[in-house]
View 1: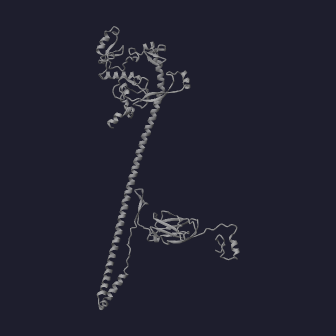
View 2: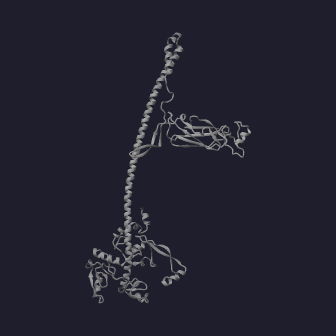
Length: 536
């Protein structure tokens, strides 16, 4: 991440990637944002505590919420609020850096959030136990703490401690050195009223449901019912305990759900690892089989190359020798006939004619003894290698169009507007069935009297050396049918096929009527073009 991107990243955004266990390692005395000991810690509604200064660094955003037309809504006024128009008002909010919960700020902002006094006491205890400097006097806020008044529950520097002992009002208070408090597990300190900083919160306003001081009940809470905190803590503590007891089972339920999720996740990872191993083993085996098959195919090709080149080389030597013998005989005879005397010609006639006759009787082929009719068929099954089915075969059999034949009852007779179907059977140079497809077959059907009447043909490769050919003649008459394989006509192609006119349906006149009216002649024909049954 660049420095510029780091500057643009919101404060606390990185905390959302920290696990709860990692945050728990900070203890209860350090802020999750600055990682330092709490300084004026405040509690968010999601119950996460942060330093006041750290919360003020978060960028607030505005949301619109529905509010009652009155700032205070009682249960009796709820029905009235439902009948009144609802109002949308902007509300400043922040996102908790730990749980990413949207938190609405009170009208006073961050400083109006509840102070976490328990965290303050825990920071004080940690400082006492670790002899950490920096704890200042609660009275003068300038000097380092030297002692503590257990009666007033305040930390005192050396100067304030001496003054505390000299004053008549506090002379009887128990002031002890800070070092003597290291064994304490809890140190209480007075919680002062935010509205009256000189007064301690020791009363509880029942109507406002909040602790207040003595000056509060004389002012803003003058007509409210209130009690000493020591008198109401039992009631409110019990209500919190009841709510806690009803909430705790959800913790266990979610912990079990989380354990099940983690168990399934572990099982899933184990399963995926096992399947990955199976896939790798299978693919590695398949790759090995394919490589072995590849090597076998390449070796087969090399063997074929050597075999064919040797055959061609031998044929070449034989042809060269025969050509040399023929040239010798021809040149010798031409020289004899051109330059020899009559006696010389007659004397050598016997040996010359014997040699020429022998050369003429020598058998030879004008074409190569081998061809390049080798192809690779990727779809051809090639057996198994290491238990894996592999495909791809070298095919040495080449199709010979002159040996290919056409089969089917519709070869030479057909009816107009009726489908014609016949089969092309491909064979190699030895006349053996090819047994595979993939050949380029071209079929054309053209009316002999109407050159613009060209039929659309269909060729279906059966992948076994046979091809189904079909078309539908639209008109009657003679057609020229051409079937070519690799650009060459097959056996019997081209040929003529006669398409007959389809019999017309009778309209009250039948074959027998035509036969009877002709005097019983065998050549009689019905108007539909048909003949009498039994006389065809």
